[in-house]
Image 1 (tube, rainbow, N blue to C red):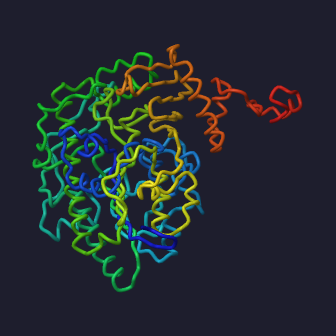
Image 2: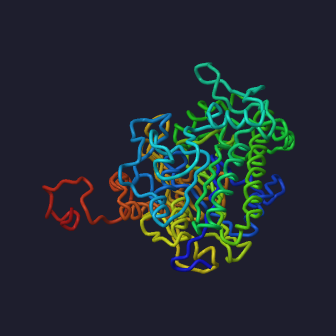
Image 3: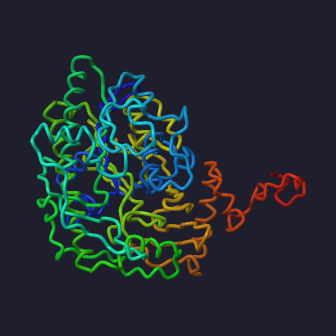
Length: 506
């Protein structure tokens, strides 16, 4: 087990926009096969309530890097659709890379960066080619050199799938066939570069006793799903069941959800194409699982299994047709907020499943703990090692998430207690879902009298947690919702001090 001051090697594996029901160890119904990630879960701990702090790439990844919730690190939107928020972390912002570098760690990051707009992963101390942006940068010089060195064909696609936008223009590319063999795919390139780094770090670990942190961040299975035939055709579309939430009518829901459905053109696609997209998405996951298997095999070949902790997660989920949506956006459904979370630590029990709520910032704290460093600077996270080691420790009973906008500002906050989920939408109606009675979140019960006590309880609890965090979203709730007795003046009117309305406090 990891003790005080003990420094583990750390292999961190991450995907982008990854639904948990595409992993065999989560689906558990035989509909998908991911043998390498399933094997990782069998030899480690699977967290069944793993969530992202926000379902959008750059802010979520910034939370992983810093251990800070998005409202705290303030990088709130992707730069590509930026709506006026900052696109760089502040000077002096804590990142887990700083203490690891000072402790002598080799630091590597292969794959998707997508945090700061101008600063690279190298600015934060990570080795590896700088691969910015939201999707596979297939024109990157290092990737082109990889293809040329091996005599592999360049990137090219056929049979693109697009819907039709409200203005009658072609919609975003959703999928296409990739005219390359597996060895030429960007995913194979990333795994190859990761293995090369692993080999160098293993030698340095053996001769210089330097531990390593190596992250491999795949750009997929983020859409568009661009796959060689071998994986494009891995699953039969005719055997795919559409998600139950395609019955979504958006009745009683915020109007923005219907607008996002129009943006992602779901209703302009035939049903057989929607089935094909789900099948291809699953094929994308299978291809990434294959590449992760190559990396894990290299870890074993290099004799590093007994000294290396392995962590796997995603920045957020994907709709893939659920709720008549694609991608992600201003809708806090399980499809995009629940994420995979698997941790394997040498010496810890195998095959464990934990039900505690965890998030990306907890993985930040865990990385620090594995490195023998103080996890406290990851202020919104807690180390998962006690849970991985099989200990029962007091843990959070709810999970709080946030959203700030993508194509336009759209603030939201969510609290989830395991059965009920409350979403606060300032510009529209709030949402309340009973995930036991309505697991597909089709019925907004915010005004249902039988859940009035639940609504009141979650509203007050969310308000308390936002106040405790220092998230100023609580000011809106204090004047628009039943947040219970107040001990301050939410109007910020200092001239009313002493009037007794709020106990004389401001």
